[in-house]
Length: 185
Image (cartoon, rainbow, N blue to C red):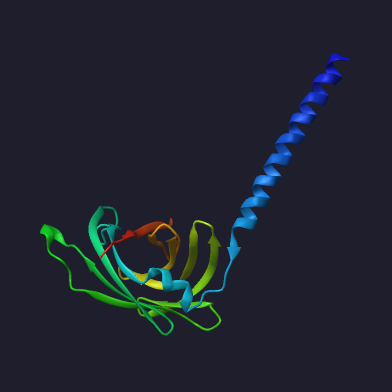
């Protein structure tokens, strides 16, 4: 009789854990809404941003380098135009680099760094928007599969991370990551 009571208590505990887990997973799946990218997806980026760029140095593919970075972002017809300045050694600033972030009308391709990337995921949560765009590219003069993840937070934060996997195998690694916050000017 005692054994049966213990088993029933364990069964009830298991049911409670199962129900709580199910409810948490259901809430998380509802909180993440798939979206189709459009020019308006990038409108929260318009303005001035400052933060850091962490990157794996291409000289040896292992040394981690951290630099101050600034973005000035303006709207255009199909997305935004980004002007980037990154600090070099001894406080010198690099030449500004200008790039556009634009999407196709169907939201399935994104233009960045002079090429079209396939949008493999785009999700919106109460905390912000995450999009993943990827494709073949050159990294450090080697053919690779590159995956970019852009997170636009509702709390004036942006993270752009580039993951690289060299063709022919190998591990995926983070080539660089921008962590930016909006500046008030």
